Image 1: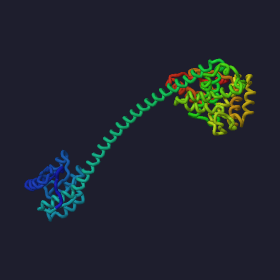
Image 2: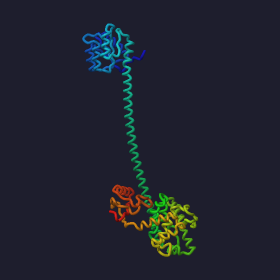
Image 3: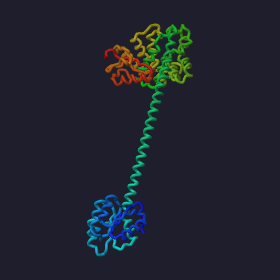
Image 4: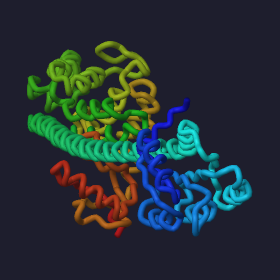
Length: 434
């Protein structure tokens, strides 16, 4: 027989005969049902107003209100309740009316069989049982989803907090790295300035060469660490001359006798040797080492030819010879800008890489014809100003390119950047801008 347990379900038994009600109560309670009883339809309806039930068992023949009438009224009050009618064989017409108007689930003949009654109740309540199980599962699912949502939100908040911590730490590391990099670059500049204090070495020459290299690099494909190494090499070009006799430094290189000139041209190798033990400057030493290599392969020390010469060294040679011709440290006279450019053109393909020489001459001519400029702090900048030269945060670290048109948003970013690195920026703009 099917499982007829009634645990968790309530039943209203209605009959005008107390002994029938008592029999139904005993049978149903023995199977776990909560049982309510009423001795007539009117009493049953009053009970339903106060106590909804899951099932209703009603006799058909009752005074004042038939079972059909009672169940029809009960359907209005508790439409989800399972309705069962107990009827005699003589009541078939009334039974059909009850089924039609009261939506009876099942009717049973009196006297009834307890097992049949319990089986009918089980069948009628099965849908309710499944609905309750579904509702319980849905409630559990909603609760678990709410818990998962809470956990997800808590996890998301922790991830957000952790991300913010990491971003702050990353910003701190970047700021610290920028300060260390700026200090390192400043140290290289100071060393370059100290070297130029020796008699015969032109003050500011190395810094001008470094500036040329920085501006030339992007035009010839020199960038990143290779460009920075080349800028350092330009600043430290005179390092290998540290122990040279003063007479060699005060005499133009091409005016030295052959032996002294050969010794003098070893200074890039000495500089490379000094820088070899410093990891941050080892690349600069390698660029410096190839300073006197020639594009036609007739240079020193390794007779490298063409593109076998590091690009940085090819750029450095062109920039260095231009400035040293202009200062008079290479030839016995100071060259004008036009004569120095002619020197570069005449050496194109022999001493100099033709591509590098052409790009450098074009850069020099642009600079010579550029409008007047002025140097301002970030606080003095205004929207609409145009950069007259590349803006860097240190040697070789490009922030904005020359001819960049400034707007309010960019000026705010520059201000935030200099506050973050703890160092003021000097910005060169064209005088014609407002």
